View 1 (tube, helix red, strand yellow):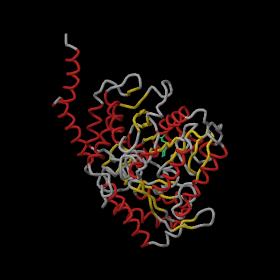
View 2 (spheres, protein in one colour):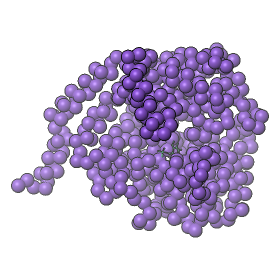
View 3 (cartoon, protein in one colour):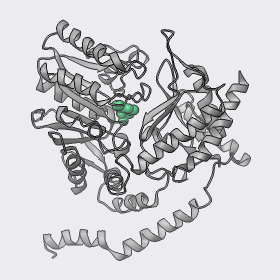
View 4 (cartoon, protein in one colour):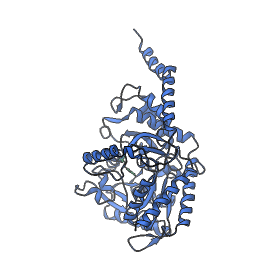
Length: 480
Ligand SMILES: Cc1ncc(COP(=O)(O)O)c(C=O)c1O
């Protein structure tokens, strides 16, 4: 009869087994062989067209509407390149809207996933979990704790649910406060509460209003001098109108869906300070910024740690999380769920974070900063070569802007055709056909955004990407 210690040792020896290691090596080598022909964008194979059309028709039937892009992945890719089921290969500059930050078919992550798949369960939960749940929370907290008071971490399996957790934590801490402050243009996910916070009428159409929200204008890069004063005034007005009623101010430090808008530290610090003076919780939504800017958390890059009470993360972490200070720790019963996440997601998420942390990616001269510089260089060249596609960006109030591209780190945007919605969507479709997958963001104006796979993309690969972008924009211009 083996002892209990022996049984644990058996698990560990399975993890270290040379037979397992060798088998994983064989599989990964086979994968690398299959990927080796994926080196550049290429068109679809005509003989796969019929089957591909049938996939798309089935998808449209199941969902009740056609997808935005005719995208069905083949399951094979190579870094920033993905092969679709029609045999075409495309540069993936959006990656599941910021999830696959080591691109497609990364062999180290596949090996990690293979190891994780030997674990006893597919999913892990809040009642029963293995060591990786603890380890992921620890790595997130270890970094978050530098310069902030964040001490606790609740893992959950979507960004919207991480945000729901944050909202509950803030309401409970500041009860009976029943209102929330958010930035105009905010996005927070698609649960019934989050669509109330998100500043999009379409997102909440036909739904009852469940959260009271007061909006504060975001920083305007074209009017830097008075942006902070305007935002502070809106915050003060809301507080005067509803004294003691705001549980929190939820802030995206770079507006994601809102248009990849950035703001300087001083803007946020002034608002956060005012929140503190009024007992309003500061909740930073890093679901889109996490890991892809110049630090693990963008609040650290902006040196705002002293102000944050609650932070939510997601997307590239594979498993999402809500982190909070001791003061904001909820009472038992508030946060739980069946699932934390899958064993593969937990292990791969941790591995991705470790590789970013230890691989020279962050910091002002890190790999992500270099990738961003290459993006600006290539888009700057394109703008210079084709001023006819890059006129001033038009705002609904008649104002125009010459900020034709921007963003930070692995969040990149550019704005051809004045940011007119129909032409930006046409440009995204033309790019897709030509071999680059991007997406749009913002409302009026609308921008093209890239969330490239920062973990594996080389700066020089933007040469190929922008050659294709140029072809696509020329087609849009010719279509007019
Ligand atoms: C800032 C922000 N918050 C929340 C979410 C919602 O995350 P999820 O789609 O995983 O629910 C997103 C997703 O795009 C986001 O960008």
